[in-house]
Length: 239
Image (cartoon, rainbow, N blue to C red; front, top):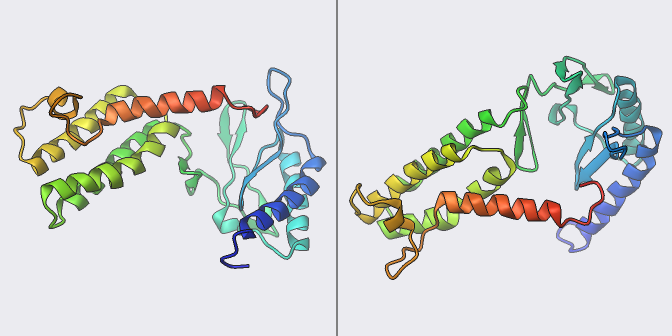
């Protein structure tokens, strides 16, 4: 079914059968409000399990493995990660799939839906990583033989859209974003031949001489408002 337009739907339906046949064996985590979260959540072939005890996790993994084997598929422990939190602290609890250990998040960080997870479980580490990726992208654009206005086009429609998702999913302080914007602004001034003393008001202001470039801080605020509206207006009962 490669290239078929209905193949994603067929795959999603098959995964839904496996999930429904597996999630009934254990109960999910119960919130303080009394609501119970589902023990399995999935997006396409990415599956996340969340239980309240080690025994439940082992039982759920065993059921999932049996159903996946029945469907002629298999898990890849090397691409999976596990994390165990007991009383607010990380513990080195190892889980297995067919006697193959699943790496811990503390050993190998994992990226899921555009978000990195490591042992610290803090977004402060991702701030530094985002800055490094932004500077790397700016240097790559700067090294090209394109004229300045085309370098600015690469920034506006190539690099900035890639930064919007991390800015939305991570809790990044506004001071960090403003510092990152100063770095971006220095490259924009260099490409356009503008003086270094030009303020951000003149660079990103909306007026008669408006430049076709977006301010990183304004885009950051828009992404946070968009995220808040998505969550508050969602009809999903689990949100």
